[in-house]
Amino acid sequence: MGDATMQAKLSIRSAGKHYGAVAALQGCSFDIAPNTIVSIVGPSGCGKTTLLWSMSGLHHLSEGEILLDGSPITQPHPDIGLVFQDANLLPWRNLIDNILFPFEIKGLKPDRDWINHLLERVKLKGFEKNFPRELSGGMQQRASIVRALSLRPSVLLMDEPFGALDAFTREEMNRLVEEIWLETHTTIVFITHSIEEALFLSDRVIVLTPRPGRVKNDYPVPFPRPRTMEIMAGKDVYDLTYRIKADIYGQHDDRLTAAAE
Ligand SMILES: Nc1ncnc2c1ncn2[C@@H]1O[C@H](COP(=O)(O)OP(=O)(O)OP(=O)(O)O)[C@@H](O)[C@H]1O
Image 1 (cartoon, rainbow, N blue to C red):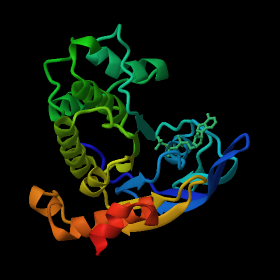
Image 2 (image 1 turned 45 degrees about the vertical axis):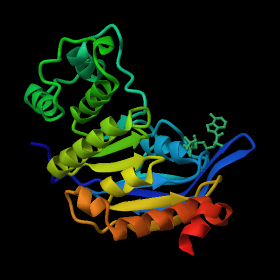
Image 3 (image 1 turned 90 degrees about the vertical axis):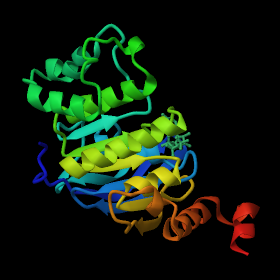
Image 4 (image 1 turned 120 degrees about the horizontal axis):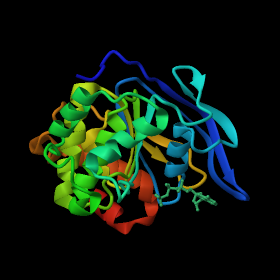
């Protein structure tokens, strides 16, 4: 299932975004290769959400452009799916009707086999008739992932999707995203405040500077998949975590300096 042959290369070209006098992004450039997972991290307020929303076509850049396979993204795009921190399920619709909602408003015919497969995959089979209030936070977020993937996007943008979940559920969700990606190879752009999460999931981690955000560093994450507990507890992961933290906290954090001595 899934369509691993889809290509979806994103190119961010000198992206700049101003909110009045506030420059959120400036001169931000990088490419995202098709079928990879790239995480974007950086200090709070550095422009991560602004960048992701611009990639989705929901925001217009003040400068520069974002291209999907060479075409500028200027409005929400059928090949680009979005998952937010809040699952945003409609409370008056049950789970399956929430998943079918985007098909209704777009006038598209849902692929029920694919949706059933996704529900099975995220362990929500049997909960189709439940309303959001009858689902845990993790289940709601799994439903929102199914809702996004049911449209078979070639790019999935995820904005701190598991930030509101407890640590165990979050790890479970990370493994689920990895499993889904191993199956579909959808290009995923993932915003997170957790370096551990970024290193578990990604082929690359891009660190942004403080506002206005631009690329400070761009790290390949060369660890094999699936990323086991042993890999994640290893020295290579520790070293990369340290480097990313040093990028974000700089010389201002005595704990980092102490750890390096
Ligand atoms: N609608 C808006 N109007 C004015 N300023 C905004 C608006 N949206 C964002 N900003 C400002 O732009 C900057 C970047 O915001 P953004 O939400 O993109 O950062 P972020 O890196 O995602 O932050 P966080 O990590 O805290 O979620 C922030 O300083 C924010 O105050």
